[in-house]
Image 1 (cartoon, helix red, strand yellow):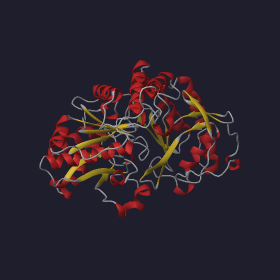
Image 2 (cartoon, rainbow, N blue to C red):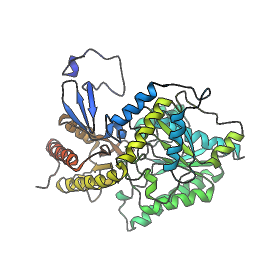
Image 3 (cartoon, rainbow, N blue to C red):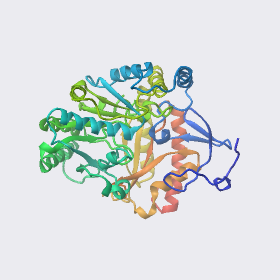
Image 4 (cartoon, rainbow, N blue to C red):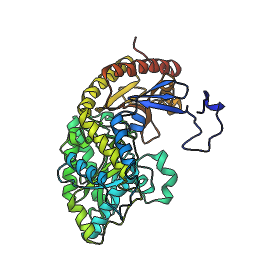
Length: 455
């Protein structure tokens, strides 16, 4: 085994990703913890990238994967059906809103979103609505890294370099009602933001609009944004009024993380298409899914078939992992635990905001939670972007053995926030570990950046 301590002592890597950042070599993981090859333990306070919902090293999932490996690890869907894929599709449909009875498996979130876009378009063509092609999304938002998903993503830092290569889609403001300084109630603000969708539909031409895509509970681009309750019902009404498909991106909020199986289950806002991934297989295998109703799928199949696919769609090993993950979510009562522990963790984050007034907002549901930094709570003015507070808080936490996640809320340009999204197996004692480290981190951040602290 390679034994090294400092990353600069290791041989140069042939890998490259977003930057030159080097991290320790991981050795093993169990529960909410990971260990590097020097034996240092780290708390996975973000479930990787909000992926490992059931925690690391679950023996029942690993055993299910081993059993499948002994049978078959790959069978192309045009040559064979496979039992894990058939059973996972059935089980998933049981957990989804009524009528979402057709499942298309993929390998990740970007593929799931792309599949939703392409099924929506092919349904429109198959039903004589070929002029419908525009997909309205929100700004900010994040829907994936492929060019199709980037076209509906509202995150300038990620999409701007590629704008000449894609057909960018219309955007409406995300429902950031917590930033508004007006005389409206939260219910009125929710309606106001939803009505921006109707305005955009009318300005684009209703006959050209195919769909509206949204994260029911925001991910990294908005820091676990939750709209006012009134928003969701009104969005559904507007989509119905204009014959537009509503797509829910549940890649991050799905599979129980928010205290319901889907983030959208918190409201009466049933979508027409759903994108799932991340926690759907909890990182044990690359897996995602598009869920759709037969009323959308059948016309496409009748018109010659769904002109779309991926090599690893319905992979038996990945589906065996996903099926075992659903079993463990049910067996361990993890959705209920996410709701209860989420409330406890959120209360602790609110307490930290009382101690550190540069935390301007704490939000989210279940174990999809975030805290946003501000210069002034009254105006919600962001911290100066030059301080790079969102990256510094991640680095300070990592130095102390805690992994958290961060981004910038306001289009990726400013509005620093960090997310705390531990696995759904988290206990109250482990929440205490996380919060104690966060307290030390925020103290250090306040000292370095000359930010106020309430003593």
